[in-house]
Length: 480
Image (cartoon, rainbow, N blue to C red; front, side, top):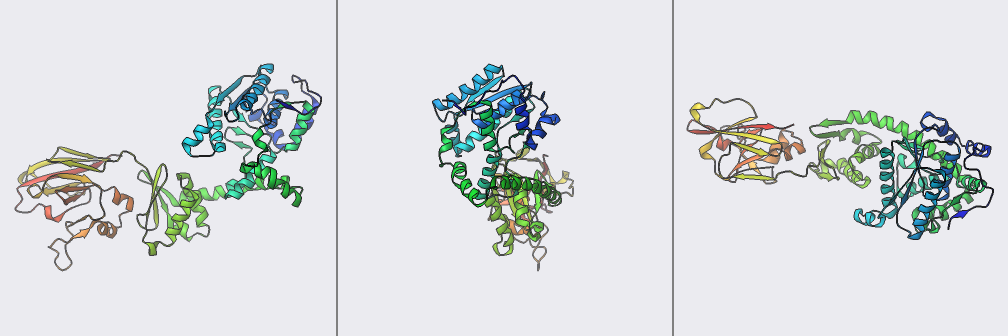
């Protein structure tokens, strides 16, 4: 059943002075109602659950004269008839006042199970995604939600308990892109007074009484204890979140300057100068700010920095960290951040010389010619090999751990004319080739022997000599 705190009802179509006297006490509400973006003619989408906070918000906006209000209600189908009752209350309020009403039923529990997240997180994701969809479809300017000062205090404490940085300590923003929270400086007690003064009907969510959820535990168990220590704790936490919001602005400015200095574009991804972070007194915090946008968790960032600090002892070159969309590879004093590519070819094999080899982003044109017709071009893009020395199958793939070859032009120290055997890993390391580039360098094999480290160096055993009769000419290009 709908709840009502007994008291005189307000004429919903009027503009009573008590509303102005009550609401305009809050500087945040005063700012939002008077600012151009929150003008009475501003098209708004009001998110209304049917609870006392959102009913207060909806009623206050309506009687203050806003002329372009849409109302959105999410039915999360979690409490059966109780959830349906919430929807009916909000829908009836809108019908009586001829306000456009939007609603949706979510399979919240199934959504949470599919993604392995909590019910509250699932409801939050579904809610905000749908609200934004409704806002756009109806050409509305802002989405208005009813979080209040008590919600803000609980959010700050919850974030602190779960482990957070500056951004968590600032709590919820009064304006975050298209989301506005005009009641964020209004306490729950003040909302109760408004409900009493206007005789508003509202619905009480039965789950709010349970301390099973973390937020409810903070609300029913922690906050009362804190009030015993400091009767003004609500104001203190509200002021604290505001200071943290301003601190975060200053912090973000500094991080932005550092980001431009240490994070640079590298091929299709980015290169982060780890050496700067390792030398910085706040390197761990900077690493968190720079890397979490790429999907890294706080635990992954800690592991990465621990590995980087012990780099020489652990020989961590090549260590990889994976997120949903990126692959982060360590290499000496740098970290390479590369987008994950799902359709990478790992091996292509031929039993003859094709006219062209296409391998991921690489294309190799192939020509067989008598040696007398070959004009050699000095370029790493070109390879000239003795075709008669090469066995089939012809294969192209990426480097493997045990790979070795006899790099042309790098003979043994004591006998420069004799080819020297070298592991690919040692060759890459000696030339200081970044790990991500090593991993994406094609290797061309004839039989089981490497004949060309594509785009870099041929194997000495297959070079063109005076006895060569037939030459295979290879020209590699890479798509952008």
